[in-house]
Length: 480
Ligand code: UDP
Image (cartoon, rainbow, N blue to C red; front, side):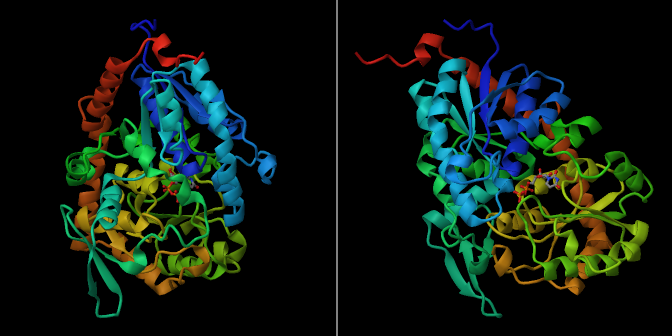
């Protein structure tokens, strides 16, 4: 029988995409810091990527590995992460490869016999396998209660429809704590992209699971945490913002990937700028852009006259002499940036974001107001939360939810105006900054001892500890 004096053992199994692995590794670190024995399950290439993040932490975390059949499904050898898969066709091969992980996952459960499994919402089949061994499975859903509540409202009710003066159809999500209005063109279309990814989300298994662990904190979306728990009748624990568990420069710089810039140079550059003067512009890991759009951003930033750090992937498309023209006023990062480290610097006073949930939370945690430029999926929901409910954002006014090639180009003048509105000194901008700072303080308090997320983590550990089963109870009887 498992000795109850042994620490609780949690197995974390992240979906292999950067914006899912990063918060789950943070989460694993936070549970380890609370005395839980933690194992992260992943594939060999992904293990190499997260090793430095784990080693930079202050607690021991074990890694368990399962093979990923990249070559067998027609992906390049070692290609084990969705963020490295450029086309829909290759993405679909990646999805096929995931189906082969069931057996190895099963074997890992038998070998390690953890007390519970925390796995990504994109890996719903882990529920059944864990249930075979009487192990509770918790779902990590990389979004907010707010987004899930809106999606649920649109799924379950017929929305109220009206026509805007410009001809756009507006949908009002019924039954929510606030009046949330979306353009039909902003709604995520999970079926039309040709991608098999949405099919991975088998909601039934996620609903049958023990509950959800959310990278969020109560004070950010209290009405929606309550709506989720009371009206949708689902269990959730807020344990975030998880990026805040990276306490020092070493932890922040090791998060995700190795930065392409010399971190010390980056910090020195920021040290030379006055407090709150720098704009940070980045679009996450999936926000590819066309050449025209890259140029418009470059011109918009130049015209704004503000110091900036811009994370850009398609560097060949910068206007000629661009970096000479902006000189020391702008830093262009070509590839992976130490985002949380940059946002945490006092020189950063605003950001332009595609509204990925991790980035939204990282901006909130560091008290930075934002220009919202949503692309697809739940980004438009996140924009509503940031701009309308929390009052810490300036919307760029994007109306279409679309993948790269269908996204209309936003011109430089619009980008310049939004950046200047965000960074200006008027009353409206000051009020936005004050609210962002206040929310940032609440985020930090949430994870400190006695804070709302700290308490939720403790409650979850206590509940799971009570549910622990002796080892022999986890192994199913072999049929004769
Ligand atoms: N990120 C980073 N450096 C980069 C690009 C991304 O650190 O150059 C991190 C960022 O801090 C965030 C995650 O990658 O934690 C991106 O997640 P998000 O949900 O914002 O966007 P997605 O990649 O899903 O579009």
